[in-house]
Image (cartoon, rainbow, N blue to C red; front, side, top):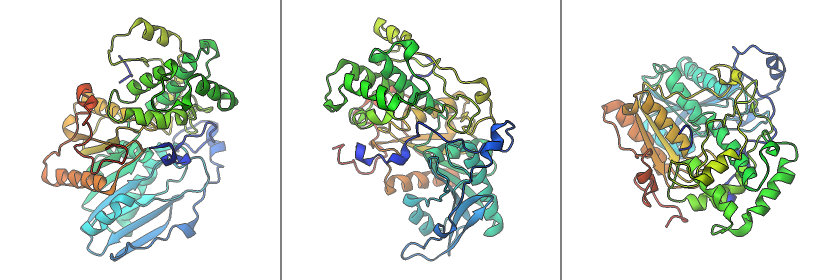
Amino acid sequence: MLKKSVLVTLLAATLAFPMATTEAAKPENQANPEKIVQARIPYFVNESKLPFDSLPGYETDRYWGVHNGAGYRIEVPKNWNGELVLYAHGYRGQGLELTVSNPTNLREHLIKSGYAWAASSYSTNGYDVAQGVKDTHSLGTFFNGKVGKPKRVYITGHSMGGHVTAVLAEQYPKAYDGAFPMCGVTGDTELFDYFASYNIVAQALVGIEKEKQQFPASSTYATETVPTIMAKMEFQNGILNQNILYNKLKAVTENMSGGDRPLFDLAFENYKSFLLGQHTTAPGYGVAPGNIVNTTDMVYQLDNDPALSPEEKALNESVIRVAADPSSKQQGLTGVPKVTGNIKIPVLAMHNIGDLFVPFSMEQIYAERIAEKGNSDLFVPRAIRDIQHCGFNKQEEVEGFSDLVKWVEEGVKPKGDDILNPAVVADPNFGKQFTRGLRFYDR
């Protein structure tokens, strides 16, 4: 951990946070001049895309439409057990069309087991978690009038939707019975600190002087600076690259993204160029009035020893430091609300150990914050061996959700992984406990 002390063809372009962002709508309680501009963004729902069919072999009642500017889908099995699962989708980019996602891996299990589910498009795009929280919670209230008041409600989501899930669990604990964030941005703005750090360290390593290092990225960063970094580090040399600068960046990234662990070499090979594309030109990420990135407390390390060597000290002194604007740190003034760890309901979280887009460290940060609040008895983290972002299979998701439900209903806490113990995380077998079928590159 740094704070305070697949393959390329499998990475969809839609996962990337664009280097140039469009301003997205803010929460209603934010009073500033930008709100007037943002209110004019013509987000829309194509209602012809909302209808959906039952799964083969299942009879369900299905509802769809637009509620408070957000598209929604609801599915209720004929044998409804009186319980509801709210699903929060991931980052949609900066486009204007608002779309709904079904909980693909969980859907059949939910319907077969008698659960209703509901999903919102949110009424904005961009990394507007605050709006995702508002719209998902509002959909749950809407469900009460449309279908009936459920006796239990669970929340789940992927990626940005995992962030939405974590915030809902903290802000509305009486409304929900259990939470299941997957591959979530549960370190909130620390994800953007990580993106910035990767690019700043890369610039320093190839000899760009501190005063010339870029944050935010200029209009020529992608076309001039990135090719220079890639050439000097010989990015094309493959997984066994012996370039000294390359391996220093790799070591810093390993420590920054979760520490020594299985699959990291392959993961880095497949994300190294991708991460150079995450250096934003708009550090408010479209949802804050100023810069939300803070690298002032980042400690860049080249090995697993927390004590800094002379070489590490020199590296840390060679990089620019970025401080977040004071207004962006205040709760309610950004679309990226903090995840505090103050949970009051059971939470089971899953993360892929080789994910470097929303890195494994996000789940570790979440675990640390929960422990600091004295709430570890309500938290179960699980590690899954995959290098994709949100690379879970159906069995892994169903098992995780089912174990959460059993915990809520019977009061018996399920097993998890010790994700904060460096020796455990570094073990070659780490993550096998809950991985259901090793991936083809992990055999």
